[in-house]
Length: 431
Image (cartoon, rainbow, N blue to C red; front, side, top):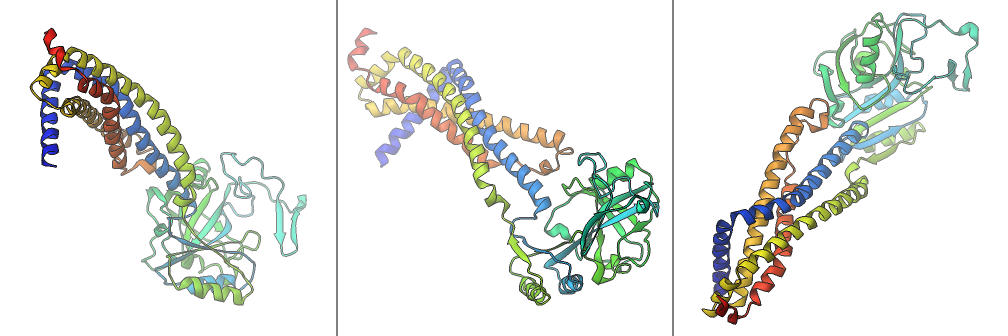
């Protein structure tokens, strides 16, 4: 073991001396190898960025990995009371109830009837409809109000801060403050789709909600990106309950009740038992977005790594050609070393040491360029792509670059090393 370590040390020292004496050839080897190693690093980093982008969008809709989601359907008049009473004051669960709300001029139809996006991306919503326990029907012309200065949004009432489970991205203003006393004038946080509508249309600050005792005067406190194309507004459940009884917090035309919980909380069992007692069967699932997308992400990474591997092979061919040319020029040197007793394995180690050092230097250069590129990307594109904000260079990409440099050094130096080890001692007589 000591003898092997000594040979390895000798090969490393002589290899470094060879690199210093042939700087131009080393530079040519690095240039040919640089693009290949850089491609591997960029692909690995790009796959990490793509994974984060995909999961960031899914977290807005589904929630963070590990979140327990309970979807509740049905139109039981006790549903709202059961859900709100169970999660009230709980730090480990948040209830979300949805209903339609119209903000603006009273007695008119909203400009986006049905809560469709105001940019027209959902097309024509069709004729006005009304729904009850017996079904849905089209409103007769005599009952259709004229369109006016009003906007329809999907109103989501929250029992607590949902951002523990869904990391909504703030755009402007503030989020709902659940630490203060509930106000009679509900505070609303709009999503980007709703904010676009209120920027496009100037409407009175009057909100009407089905089942409310009177129209409300809301005030907007902020805008978030929730990934939803439908205009949506978020409100504190306790502020909305001043105007809407708990029995009417659930819209019978479009029931939307969801409870987000921390894994292992007793709320899941208690709430499930209460719901089954009133004839409602909840659907419970755990968010595991990363595992659900694992195959897709692995396939994407494999395809791009294969492409990067082809580029790396071109670099290996370049370092192989330079290595063979270098050995051809050093035939007399290697023959002389053999004549004075240098083992063949040490000669091969000298050549391999040179190519390995070249590969590591190239990998370090490629990683450095990638780190600077990542910083530039975050600086210039972070404002338009929120998932990039605060993102650091994925060091698994750096490890991949080091491995690629070592593999390229071994592949590119193996044939020249074998040729150097096979040089006969008699060759020294030609000098």
